[in-house]
Image (cartoon, rainbow, N blue to C red; front, top):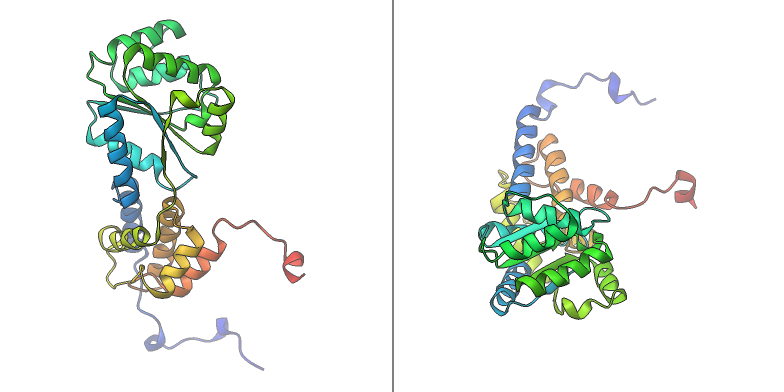
Length: 282
């Protein structure tokens, strides 16, 4: 009868090297911080930035449409950070009204009076944008805007001449069509998932500039690339979450790089619904 592994005293020389869990957690926390603060350049983001520059020059409104977790928000936020004095960027809350939205924008541009009645806020905003040097308004999560807010944004543009860009999903386009407002934000940028080459370049950037592990993982090649491409569908949000967890578990197991088996196991479990054991057997 085989002995239980728990009952066997394993000789010291066979044990894996001692792993300092504190160091592992510190390294993982540093990677998480970099993912949150550092901007990872992609060809898709660069194309979006050029498009935004054109809208500012032409003083035209538009919309950035794409699925969740492809990098729309992070890219838009970075564009604003690069030119904070001339670009305003806010995220709309759920079921956001004009009053709430305009108050957010006034706070974002550091206006001394960000509160008031709806009509007062719109006229105040229209009158101060040019004075404050604002050349572009970016509204993220625009799917959350009420019909009233979308109509007021149209009027704000007509009164101020400052172009407005709405950022959201297909639901935003559906709302604009239903409210007969699509032609008020006519120019479209499709912010879709990364293409093959862009995804490979992004993985190389992440491996060397963000992860910086002792050994090369070669994320952009072979089986690891196939696992990441299949499990994330080239969505940046999913990629970051899967890699962060894979790094943590790989380091805890004593690996100096992202381990293929660990990555495969994590990727297979990410974003999949729970299936009861009896259903799995069937």
